[in-house]
Each structure stands twice: as structure tokens, then as C-alpha cells.
Length: 577
Image (tube, rainbow, N blue to C red):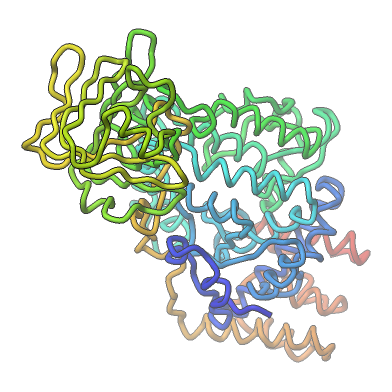
């Protein structure tokens, strides 16, 4: 069995900082009881509403009912399916989460929801990530769809609004899950999310793809609009919404189409509508329909302009193979819309096949980068396709003064000092004492600015989010505020935890529970979950039955959970409480 550290060592370097270590001993006996109650309750609640694959998948992916699963155990099962699992600490930047998915790694939040938030938590937790996402990986078609989603998601162009929203939602999830947070802190965090969500900004490519992910992977239904089952992880891990979503009078059901990306979502509210897919093939067709229009597929000047409008770090790929990563600040086009010159501002990286070119990292290109795009007058092919000898025959020779005239009217004049070739193509030409100007005489590069490095290529094949070599040009930093802070417990809480442990040992070893139940009844500060677990152990204790039944009328989450739990016991064991 591979250890967590072995898995981390196998990951790309830039992803390793986002991985956490599951300290299994840090889970309290109550944490395991929370897991046990909710997984049993979800399985009961989803008996007739979840897609049948879900229940088979729980077993085949190492998701047991009695205790929080170990990441190593999940990973061992996922390995049989060609996937892996790692622990993470709360929300990840969307592009990072998608990259894990793209390399077939299931990112599982290390924390479990608190006792106070058993019914619903805004924070990703091990119940949602493992019992929600893992089971359907046993379906090959779905697993391939999920991986493909990751490949596209990691390349989607995001904007600053997306990053602001991610950070606000992450902070909100931490604040709301922290039982020590004040009402003022929660209200402030909620207001920050609401303000960002209400900001009028055109949805980015990444945001539109996130909507499709939400309506499928997280909140998807499968079947027909009048006869469907649940497969979305968000629904599968929510006791409340997995039930309320089945009410067609309050939650509309629509056939999944590409139009679903028009529907924004609010993670803090129940969804007003859900989308129904007919099959995994249907999912993949809708995803590919969106993919065709993504900048990573389309390329061209329109994609460059989208990257410029986003104001984020993106990578454009020339037809020579050269990758330019940076914040696109200007795109000049000709009369028919062809991009003829591009500029980036700030740190810029030049790379090939995801590897930074020596000497062309963000330190060297710290002030930005600029280059013409297009063909030269008199050349029948792209400049990248000519051999060194062919270049010489056209007067393009290292150590000589060279003048390159582009069809766009842009002229590059200077001493050619280097031609960088890779894979039998010219990808970069460097000039000393160089002047670049457009057809109207505007100076695009002045000799006093230093060496002019010109990208070689006459078209942009692809534009995608992030940098080409993320090790050398990291875009996202692992969060410094943990979603899983260690908690100090009072002596009374520790005594309660000891009772949870004793109940588990009594159940697992089939000991007589009477003495333990007497101890529980004698206390006046016992968790309702402790009392419920005691009731499961003994069906002949009228006193414990009466106490638990009295909890049904409590307001809030505790009353809801007790009522649901008693319904399950009545159904499964034929008891009457």
C-alpha cells in the first residue's frame, strides 16, 4: 500500500504544496460517530433516489460505513480504477482542483463537518469528497468524463473576479464551520460573498465551465425530466437537499443542454432548478460542445482578446510551438481582425511543451514582452518552417543586419544575434540594436530598451489559463489560512468523547450496553448523537428511548436529524420509538 507521502512524491512539483496529510489520530471519537450517522442516514435516504452505481461504488472505492476512511485505503481501491487520492485542506483554487482531476487524482478534504453543522456545511469535507465523488469513478465512462472536465477546467481562462470569489467563498466556509466564529464575523463573510456575486462582470470562460461542473458533477440528475436518479456529489452528500431536490413543485427539472451555462448558482442557497442528463455519453457531448468554443481549442485573435480582457496570467501557443505566458495587455489587429502584434505586461515566461526556455523566465522578461505575429513579405511559409540555410538565402543570417517586413506592415530591423530552434523549427529570434515599427511609423520597440526577442509564428493555435511551466512561473499559492485548525476541547467534551469511544467498543465487541447507558442517563450534558448511538445498542431501554424521542421536537438541525434517524431505525429494524 502506498503511503500518503509516496503519492505526494509522485505529483507534479507545483501541485504538492496544495496537498495535506491526513492525521487519522486527530479525528475524535465524535468525528467517527458523525461519519457513521451521516453515511448510514444518506444510504437510507438515497435508497430509491440515487443511481444504483452509487451503492456499488461506495464499497468498491473503500468508503466504509462505520468510521472515517483512511486516505491510504481509498487510494488502494482507486488504484484499481486507475485513479489516486490525496488529502487537501478545504477549498482549492479551481484551476488546481481541475488539474488534480485531469491527472486522475481525487482531492479529498481532510476535515469532517462539525457536530454543529452535521445537516449542512458550506465547507468541503471528507463526507462530500469521498462519499460524494468517489463512488461513480467505478463507471468508466463517467471517470473519463470527469478527467476530460479536469483537462478543460485547468485551461479555462479566469479573471480577477473569479479569484476574488474563490477567496471569499473559502473564507466563508472556514468562518461558518468554526464554532467559535461570532455572528458578526459570519455576517461579514457572507456579505463579502454576496457583494462579489452581485458585481456586474461578464462571466469568464472559467466561470461558465464552473457552472456546467456545478449542474453536472455536483448537482446532476440522470434519466428523464420526469423519471430521474441522483448522481451529483453535492446532492449525494446532503441529507436535506438530496430529499428536497426530488420535489418537482419547488425544484424545476430541465434537460441538460449547453444552455445550462446561462444559469448561475449560489452555494449558500437551495438550487431553484436542476438539470437532467440521459447518460454519461450525453454529459460528454455537452462538455465537448462547450470545449469547441474555448480559447484553448479555438485560438486566434478572438482568444487573445479574451485573454487581454480577463487581465489574468494566460498562455498563448504559437504555431511554431512557442508558448508565451503572461498578462496580455494589448492586441493589435488588422482590418480583417487578424492579430498582428501582441504585448504582455509584467512577468512573462517563454516556454516549449510546458518547459521554460533557458534564460527566458519571469526574471528576464520581468517588464513584459512584445512580438509581431504573421508572415513575411516574400516568404511562402511561416518563418518557423525555414532551415538555417534557407534563412541565409533570404538574407536572414546570424551576426548580420536583418530587416524583416511583415505583410501587416510591421518592420523589424536589427542585428540578428540568435535563432533558437527546437524540434526542427525556429521558435525565437533575438536582435541587438533593434527597432520595430508599424505601417504608420509608430515605434513598437526602441533599441534603448535592450535586446529584442521576437516570437516566431504566423498564428495563435491556442490560448489557455495559467502559465506553461508552473514550477518556474507559479500562479496560485497554497492558502495560509487552514480550514482544519486544531481545536481545544473542554474536560466535559473530552468526557463525552470517551463515551463515544466506549459505545463504539461496546458495539464492535457486542458487549452488554446497560452499564454504559446508565452512565449516559446520569449525565445532563450529553450530545444527542451519543444518546442516539446508545438507542441503537439497546432496544429494550425505555428510558433512553423516551429521552431520544423527546429530542424529536427540538428546533433546529438536531431535531431534524433525530427525526430522520428514528425513521431509519423504524424502517430498518422494525422498531417503534
